[in-house]
Image (cartoon, rainbow, N blue to C red):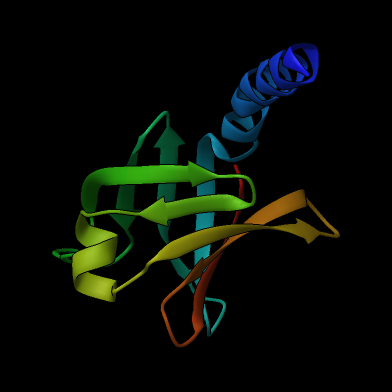
Length: 114
């Protein structure tokens, strides 16, 4: 019984960095109209967003919580100005993976690797 628990715990710990690597990096984001919305950068437990609109309050940095299928936005400009709560990893036919940014009500942006 102890061996099973130990193997399970070790497997989970070894898999955690793989989940983090899936969404780390730079992402080019487009809004619902497919217009360029900005650049999202995710490393570790922080993110930065640079909007294409000068003076946009969603630009800036914040913290995230990593999950198996994406990230949760804890604070920062995207959470405060655009009410974005989650970034979910989805399959993309062109880029392999993409992150869709979601509010509680809708998908508001799609971000692809840069």
